[in-house]
Length: 342
Image: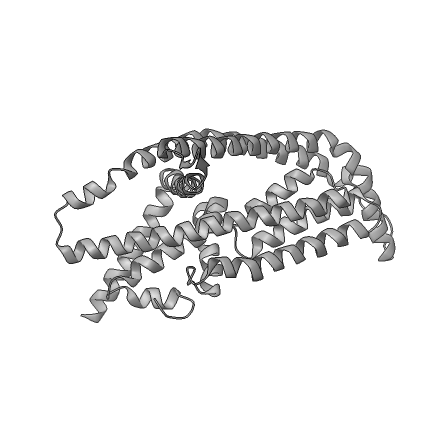
């Protein structure tokens, strides 16, 4: 009997993984829409707290304000990315001599003659190819974003009728209560995680931008946005967002001081916000093992690429909450949790 149960679990997991891989093009926009939907509702609650001639703003107004705010943010971010990529391609010629000088200096310190050049390595050609590929990928992402926003609109339309549908199902009281508890816990965890993570990412990006602006590194606003975005990726996200502007500073300036200021300054900001402020704001809502965070990051990046990295933690938290509500899957929740208390 135990062997049959294990076999059934393995077959179920295999089928789910196949569905996730095969249905990637359909599932990724839905999950992205869910994230934006949570952010819209979080903004809606904040706008609802604003006084309007002694009263709170109507729900339709705050919901419209949230949609407009997120829409404008996406448009501004997209425009900034396109301009940055185009500007970097145009200005790439001014970086080539500096890269050659850095390579020559490094070879000289190592006592090696005849250092290679950017032209000899054909890096400029590769740069153009990568930039064109990046722009093409961003264009495809912008097209997919329209579908994501359409899903968000449908979620917003449906959320008002969800309670009535739950009541109309006619489930036994115990099952209805269990389903309500699961959905409530998932909603609370997602709201807390996305709200806190968005706030701390914005704060980290703002403080990092001050460092970039003080140093004078090129494309400071773009690097700050990269810090904001990569802050959602556990562990490797903050490292990547720190090293990329650091490498540009290493090429742009003739001394190591700007590079060190960026590396030390942004790393200190990441540590202070991520290890002190964020845990205090998050509380016990994110009950997930650090090892599981890393493993889920690897798994979802293999399945869904960069989008999988961004969604790995929310998906894993939802899995823990759902598994904790059923005796047959409670063991899974305990193993994935941080302290075993689910």
